[in-house]
Image (cartoon, rainbow, N blue to C red; front, top):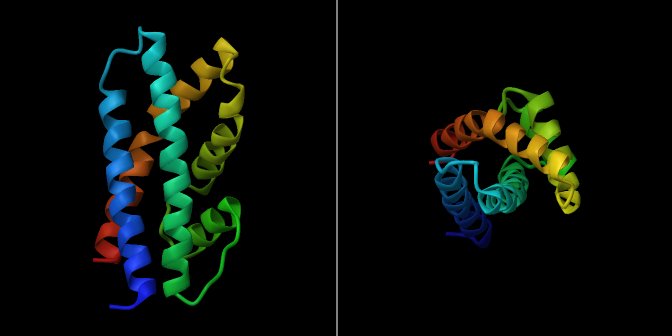
Length: 132
């Protein structure tokens, strides 16, 4: 097994773990502001792990991506993600999360996370099948 194999496999495994943790917090009632904060924090980790996983998998395909946006666009071009607009929106939300001390923005991002979670799950399941 090469170092490159180890990187993408570790990255994909870690992606499954952070996605599961996001799913766990989304299953809780959003009435508690701490759960909203926890959801946003886990979302940040999940988006970071997705783009890094894409970057490692792109390297297997002989492609390079140096930023989260480049990674998402390349993943879309390869058919790994279905809804590029949703993913770019998730990336935008991720970039806005440092401003979640604004309750209205935090509530909007939280709602977007809930709405986009199925897309994240579909993408992860696809990646598991594509890269067994």
